[in-house]
Image (cartoon, rainbow, N blue to C red; front, side, top):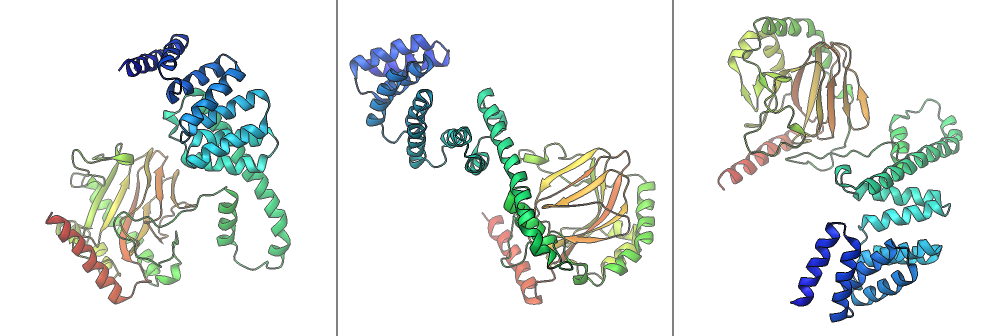
Length: 419
């Protein structure tokens, strides 16, 4: 009981930054329990703080014997070696810490700093790249740790530039042999390999159909009806303008989460008219009044291969994005369907990104993209942007697969609705 009370007192004093008083309390613990691992560890840290490396090493080595599965002890032994100029010992202790916990990011960060300090810049960059993957969010870092993470990011970025230049020179003779070959896909491959671009995958929130390629924007040749839709842009826009002229009373926010639902990136837009929607179809239900007001648009949509899945699709709508509004990065529900955009009113300052590819909408020019890949949109201008959005089947799914996907989605829905 006495030891536990003393340890709690020492920890409280440490939290209050009364480090010398805490050390006295830990000394009392050691008098009662000479191999108490927590006391040895914190006294070793205190000796490091007071720049007493010999005492710090003795205490921390005893702590390591008493608690050999604590990676923080070995990391602090590495700090002792750093103070003594023993790079080999420092590396060895950091390796021990990471052998215990490969995701112990402070030790990984310390190893990257050691590699940078000893001139192994390329190794440091690879280590720092791993650090950035597992480090906590920036708002959870102390000032010193935040500066270290910023330094790690700087080294990673600098290495990416150096590697990119190296590889471009190495690849130039090969590319010169194929002047007419398409290079877009390989260019993205190279940028991902060098760290200048991120790898994006299909990450649908509800259903993943395997073996469908993760293509951000699909080839227009797969959708021979696109030109017919684009040719109807003036008629569709006229009907949209008619709706807008009557006011936006029956439009509704695209994002509508129920109270208590986790909002994550949608907090700012939840129930906000800054991203409004005028649905012609919503989750497979035709809005008869809206289709009556936009008869030409509705008739044209019925000729397209829209998703046909009860309770899920089609969805077709006019998407109205207010000035200076950003739709945050997100993914859709399934890669079984693709999403079509037909831009109708596009002021300057608007853009759209899917994966690593960013495009600007041009009025009357449609595209089809895979929304199970991370995507985002923005309107940085002073005027409202409006596009027509339609859910269509992924053309790589056969008729049987489409029907089975529809049944699977509703099977999942029915199963969980009964719970």
